[in-house]
Every structure is written in structure tokens, then in C-alpha cells.
Length: 107
Length: 118
View 1 (cartoon, each protein chain N blue to C red):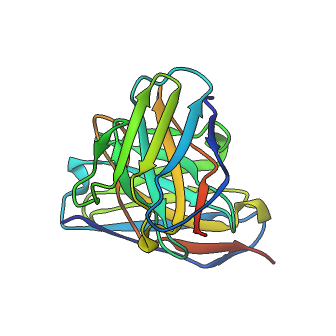
View 2: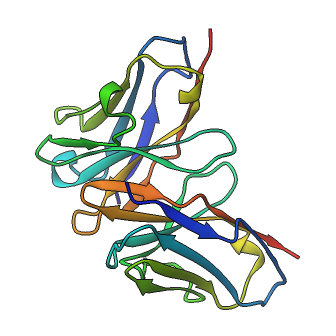
């Protein structure tokens, strides 16, 4: 199975900061990567798919990049509403795995 | 737009079978792909399996021997059965719609908590 490793596990930043989360795959997954945001007590919400395509109605401060084995999720200017845990998800050969999550906090 | 709602018992005894249903509204179950995902308390997400519009399935290898996912087109629902449960199966269980081209989950149910305990 393909393993997905996210870093950091926890991130503390100030409002307005640029925030970057990394996801590394144990083998190449082309662009078969999605990012989700999960707030406490709620279901995950799709932010980005195909590594860099923004889902409809997601704020443009979110962006994704990468291909192969290394991917990033960037929040260009952190807002209080962005406090959440973020997960990456890969799809390859009929198998899905998620990263362990990155918790984003306000400093 | 498509909406999903999970339902089923919130408490299951060890060694018994966990059974959940996902009711789909706003779209036909036969037109899309579907998935079950779970999240143990305080932990990350674990994919359980896919249900394709043809009715065929694909499962997480670690759960494959215990999982069944099926659809009921007459009720526009799909279901999850997990046999021989243990405390490790305690989790919030989500159903989700799956994009047919890139296998990401674009619509999620709100989730239902299942506790395995005697």
C-alpha cells in the first residue's frame, strides 16, 4: 500500500501568515491527490483535487501543487475560519490512503 | 444537489456485525460511485471501500475479509456491513460520493458514531 506522510503534524501561525503543509507519497501517484479540511465534529470538506484544482466555492487563498511523490497545500493568508485539521488523500490502483493530518492553530 | 445521510445502530456488541445505511437524495445512486470512510476517536481517516455504479466493489486490504458494501437502487441507498467487530472498530463512519475520474470524495454525509462495547 502507498503510505502518505504529512508534515508538520501541528502548525501554529498568526492571522495573515502564509501556511504550507506537505504531503509525501511512498511511491509516485502522478496527480491523484486531494486535500480536505475538517473542523471539529464535522465531516471532511473537499478543498483541492487532482493536486492543484480548487473545488467550487473554496476561497482562492487555498492552493495546491506538486506531482509524483511530493505535494503541498498552501494557505496564502491564514484566516480564523481556517482553524481545522487538513488531510491529504491519494488514489492509486484501486486503493485509497489518507495522510495522518495536520492541525492548524492560531498563534 | 446530492446529500447523504448515514443511519444505523450506535452501539454494537463485540463479535457482532455492524450494519449502516447511507441514504442518497438529490441524485440517482446508479449514476455515481460511492465510498465508506471511518475515523476512530481522535485519529485520522481510514478508507473502507468503494461501490461502483455497476454494483462492483473494492475494499481496503486490511478490512477486506470482513466488509460488504452493496446498493439498493429501489431505495436509493447503499449499505456497509462489517463482521466480527472489536473495540478497534469504534469510529465515526462516513459515506461519501466518489468522483468517477479521480476518486476523490466530493460530497460527504455528516457521519454516524458507532461504538463497539458489551
